[in-house]
Amino acid sequence: MNAFRIGRRRRPQCVAGDKGYSYPRIRRWLRWHGIKAVIPQRSNQVAQHRGRPLNFDKETYRRRSVIERCIGWLKESRRIGTRFEKLAVNFLAMIKLAIIRRYFRVLDLSDTT
Image (tube, rainbow, N blue to C red; front, side):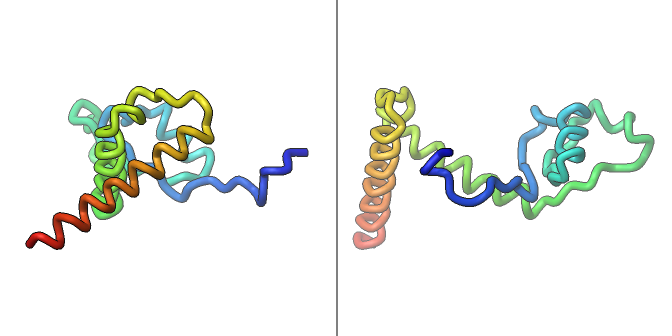
């Protein structure tokens, strides 16, 4: 028994991805597991649905950019982007330091205006 595992693992309600993930196999797998796919349809797939467009929640897709930006500024830190730290504990510490550094940078910009 793993002493660090607390609670049960839960599936996400939805998964957002760009058009690169718009494949029937991926959509079937998500549907089979009860996960809503928030993936825009590629232009060459419109004819496959015979006039029935896929459900696409634009508001949920727009929230995806928050995660993309977060990962982008985390990778500004070279140590995180190249994964210098091999141990998970040290890597997590570097992520926390990068977040603190970013927070101080945001605070500094807000004070100067």
